[in-house]
Amino acid sequence: MTNREKPYCQTGPKWVADRMARERGDKSALAPLTGQDWRAFKAFFHLVALWGACDEPAHAVAAMYHVLQAMQPHTRQLAKAGIPHVLDWSHEAEIWRAISDYAIAIVGRADGEVAAALARAIDAAG
View 1 (tube, rainbow, N blue to C red):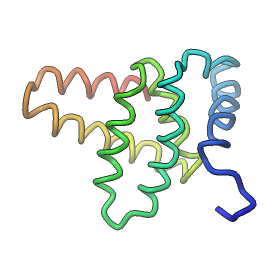
View 2 (view 1 turned 90 degrees about the vertical axis):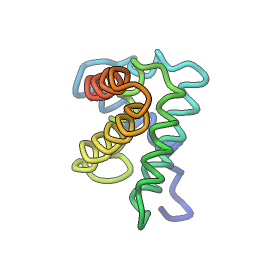
View 3 (view 1 turned 90 degrees about the horizontal axis):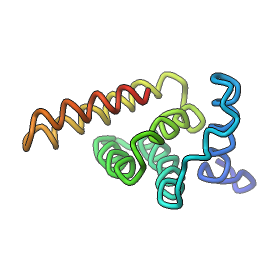
View 4 (view 1 turned 180 degrees about the vertical axis):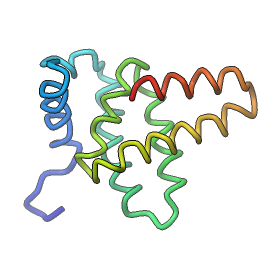
């Protein structure tokens, strides 16, 4: 990103809205975002950029997981849809799988059933 380009948190939401309109015919895809969802959604773009620049991306994955928890479950697929805006299309599935694996690892220690349900919810969002 050059100094003249806007940060991903500013360009990403429109990019996702355009993608959802084009792929799903949903012209109001961002409408369900609450104030908290919106802030988490915008933060997610920066964490994807961090993941792309990290030598050890596990910490970025953990941060993405926790930011997603600040979003309503039915809005999390919007964060996933924004991954290719920051990186490549191939990273969408790779990052989402890493987040799902992280969820299973941290929640699974406490309650395997909850972890499995969370992993299904994350997968369903994609």
